[in-house]
Length: 149
Image (cartoon, rainbow, N blue to C red; front, side):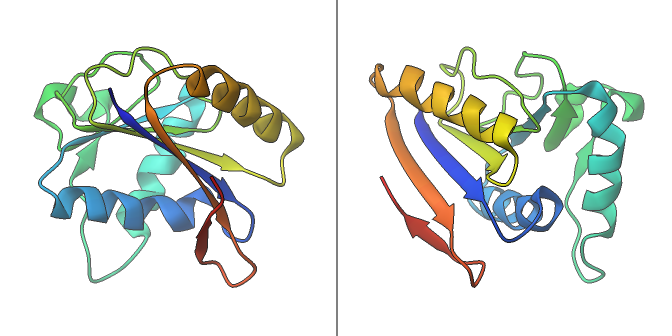
């Protein structure tokens, strides 16, 4: 079964948090899929990954850049695992579907958004009824992470 991590953002934006999580995945030698809930978010998210830090590079791309199978980090709104990734990041309301092809699934949601919070609670309820290893991390006032469940 996949390991599932919930990240409850409260102090910083997705664009501030996602790059460091992607970097940690790459340090493990993993490929990643970042699945967005709305296709219109792909390009802005891609642009933020290019510009997040001057001294670093995250190898990523969209279907506009060529086959997603060639990407180390694939940004998509589709449900497939196009690059045989080890980790799936669900952002901007992307829904949990089949997790079997991933070692880890990371669901990031904005706790300041009532709809995102409601959706995350529904995902939590559904996933706790499975055999997945699930943890819940909440951002504290300093921007650090505290394990809550």
